[in-house]
Image (cartoon, rainbow, N blue to C red; front, side, top):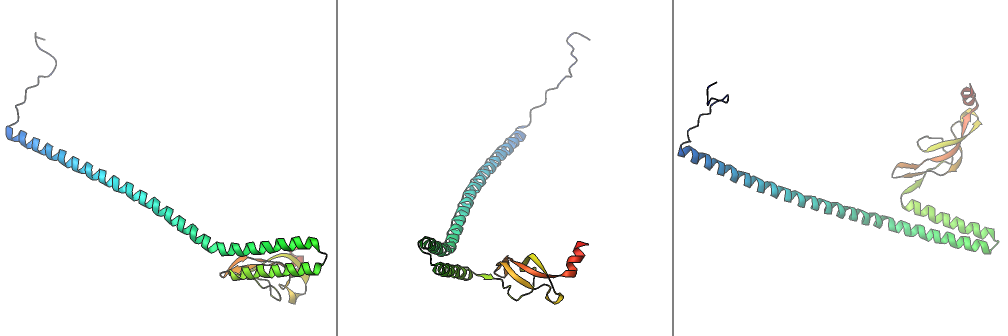
Length: 191
């Protein structure tokens, strides 16, 4: 290697761009900066709008929940008042039953209270499922006891253990019943 030589490549100085070209580049750069600034402002405005919309939506949800709670209260309040009246009557019956030995009067009072409670349930749309003289229907009844009987009686309901109810054409609670089953059926199940 000769003196003054280097291994680095020699970079030639580029000629300066013509003035027109430099002005065009500066103008384009300024336009890009202006465009970027406008887009940042738009972005900021969109974020602001989104924040307001989110707050509005949160307020809407709270308002709807409050209206729902008020509606539920409006629907439940009369029912609860009626139930409280019946509870009060039960308390009075219990208090009076401790003072007397007239069991017929106690029974009569309890029957009146039960009649009021049944009437209240019916007024709310709860309809008792009939079982007397009916045949077993798994849609409305749940057999919890079976008694052997004659073939022609199979499926008959002998006794209602617990009442069942229908609400708005849907089974709210099935009736628990005792039914007649055939002797042959029970023998087959044992085998």
